[in-house]
Length: 428
Image (cartoon, rainbow, N blue to C red):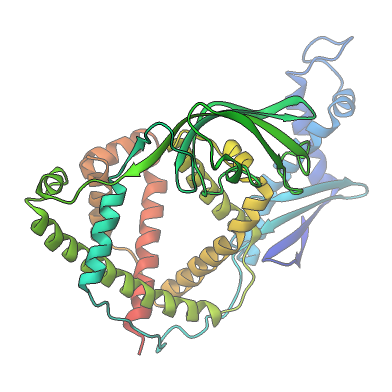
């Protein structure tokens, strides 16, 4: 087998593997022979159909299997000889069989690059100063978080900031459209959750009032059949609510686990000081890391960016599910497409991937590793989060055949964090 490698953009490679007929024919023959046992072709008993007829009838499936077998047999040799570090499965494969058999595949690999400066960096370090004004703001935020949605008295007219409970059904040219109906939905006016001026037009409504809301879907709306079209929503306001903020007194403080208002303020002050001091520390670390990234140039593999974006989308979907919504409904209400939200997440995802690659190389250069003690301590912390012991967590992971991946991921996280600590420790 001969091969050629061509470098593409974004740390992608095009690998061309060329096989002689002596190398290719046994692979194709093996694939067809295996298929012969299972396929049925009219006029022949099962398991006795001629190989050429199987190849003709199942050309696409045969080619896919042959490509897989060539990759299994020969691509490991390419990886070893060229010391490649693939970060993606092979993609865009194409097979051509003439005098020789040629298989062209693409693969993303870890980029080759020189580290920029990561020692002796400078960044501004801000010290947090606690004030009485900041404490008052924090207490007010606590009260707001503990507020409850409460119905207004009869006769109140909806205004921005109110939460309305409504039912609605949308129509285009007098015809209802899919996804445009809800029997009950809580909507905060001014949140811009719905398209166009939907929320603005509900200002002034009273409980029990019915009406029509006229909007136009965005030109770039994800549902093409709705994009740019005017729609009429028949709505009914079932309730109008406001956030009722509790009174700050000892009784309220005790419901949060404090002894009194004074105890609440004292401990809140401590919590804020601790949190904001940590935030200041993180901002300093982030400023140093930004300089490391800016001083190191390479193209990030597309597949790693896609993987990071998909992970963020999965997290978003979990958050939405906790609120009784799915991603499709969220996109529908915000007027976004899957492509648009993907593109919105791509830049920050690329930055995250680039940072991880740089930290990984710093760890390799400085011989930073994760010790067993560090792994065991981290495992105990994770187990506590789930109300388990480290031993029971390990048993569960082993039972589900996930322990090896868990160990790799946890140790990798430890190494990256130690690499960040190394940068901070060596800053001016």
